[in-house]
Image (tube, rainbow, N blue to C red; front, side):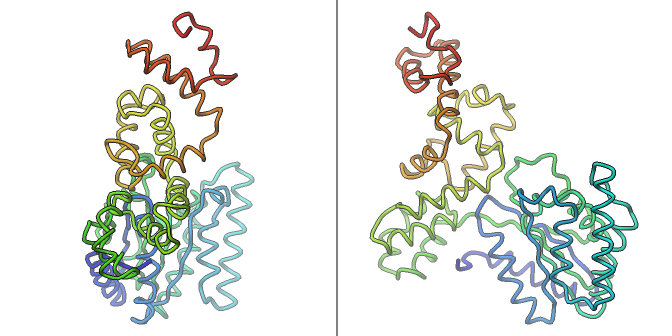
Length: 369
């Protein structure tokens, strides 16, 4: 994916990298909507850091590995060119931390283990400035988050630039790592925003030329909301002779998989309800959480206030939702519509999709008949 309209984030990263090389360590939180290009930005900047004499180390947070105590820290240690003695020390600390967590049944780390692991990295930075990048930090295991927060608080006189990508979709209000990071004097935020219409045109022109960009970029901005992943998918579908075809549908599902649970629930609920009004009642989410999830879906290019951006996006989501789950949502939507006095056509539409065991007996209600 090409970097388009990322001049401001790159300029800030370049400035703080120079400060870190001079011994004034910095921590940066790179946030933005799902699939907005945060990872691409951070990974591309690794080449820039390497050319400036910094040693890139990277790790990736994953929901599938959040149960692995110190898993993200182990990735950083494995990526680091440590001498045998320091590597053995770091591995021993990680193994001690894993054993302690199993014994206690939790991930509250011993302060000595946290200090020891961070010291290994800080000592490495004395010989070579570090560009430390952790992608999807909100998916990191808690023990690693404890270590990374400890490290970030000790960067003032270290030759380290620590960068963390985070889907700033507002659905993780319990996640405090980013807030704590930005309270520090050496903490910075970089916002990665969706592409503007001009940005979509520029990206399209890079792949397909000026004529196609003039012809298709306005529609593709409407279909993608400026989400670079969706724009790239539309380009690939065009090259394959289609419009919003399989690549676009795959990209929509990729965005859905990367979304937080509230976003997934909101999109599934909207698929059943067909409107944004009353969505919180259908999902048993607070109005505030529902609003945050809907705004995140809009920022991520999956929805507008009027619905899905393209019928292919609706089809992709509908194909990925469990049929029984969708039927249950339609049954609940029918009950809620009846209770608020909606028209019979609206209620009947939900009842037609709520048949079978998943309806919870709604079809047997007198008003339903």
